[in-house]
Length: 177
Image 1 (cartoon, rainbow, N blue to C red):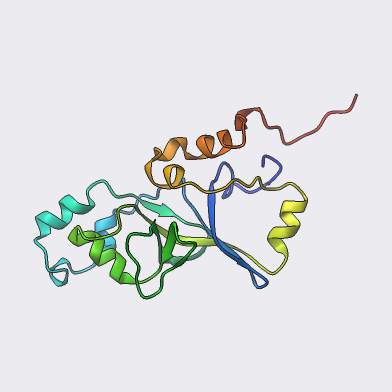
Image 2: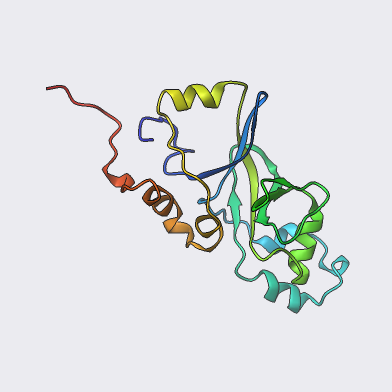
């Protein structure tokens, strides 16, 4: 919401993939970084495919800024057609932090939908509930279309349209009559 006074979260769309008594964890899904995906793969000779094929498989793949915590660790949101050692999720949208998913994707054998984010957003016990109670965040049910097929620049507005309004009309201040 506009009342949050943090540049990091201004206009962000966050997919919450874990929320329990210990806190909440999510990934910002609408802030691409400037890091090329291929740089994160390391030595391409270990993948077992030609460099040309790998570059073709990952050519249009963005790396996202997932949040301010652990920005050196990668998290992959993906469709449920594949699972890996560290996969968690709700059955439709999964999260994996195993490098296996990156290698599969580079080989052209990864999940149908794939999004790599570096870092995450996190909340301590009760923190997110408190912020929700203060109307600091809006919530909307996640859709695969918004997360994976919608153009990045449209994701925030598309998610808000699921709530039935345009976020450009939200104000951070209230008036008095």
